[in-house]
Length: 296
Image 1 (tube, rainbow, N blue to C red):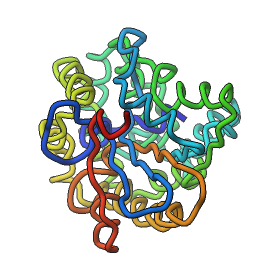
Image 2: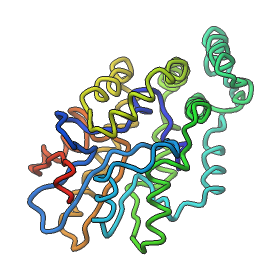
Image 3: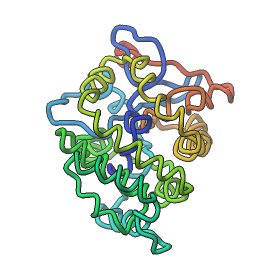
């Protein structure tokens, strides 16, 4: 579900992989020494119609795969039910208002920042801070012309239906939301305030991010991506590290299958010392970043 991908800069800019930039470099890595082909691709969850066509190598990776593996099985996701689930989990179960959760000073600052973005902050009064953070970031992206309907997962899900490709998920919707819903109060406050701060400067960086993704300039994007986690280790652990650990078991098992697989996840999961890539390498699995010529 596209709204679930919206998080502050360290998370929102989850588009890319780690490595050196070469001509034709792709945001895709491959597990080596397997009898089948298992590719890992960092995804862009919000794009514009003008960002298409995608790089040829991205389409070639899709064509190679018999089965797509995403964070959530998008093909089995009922959008209306997913929205209802998210909103029900986002509502404060204690009956505490957002103003109470943030405290008066933080609430006034958050409200001011939201109003500057054209978002009425009172609409979140009965919701928890993590829900407000996700929704505000989504609204800001859409203000800038980016739409989850043009995101890679949505587009590939639609394409896979016509091509009779299988889609699998690494986690359920409830599991994904649960990582945010279970954040402690202090981390949720930090999550929301950081989201508002990043949303205010997003316009200045989003074009650079998309351009860098297309050219495989992962070093530039790694710097932007990891910056926000430096002051939020609890957020990094809950939204990134724990989930990566859960996923690597499933990804490792793909090596024993007969199908070719394309695993599509937010690229924050493929960056840095706690990434899926690093965890797989720690397990003795060789991985390489691909270029266009590797998929011809």
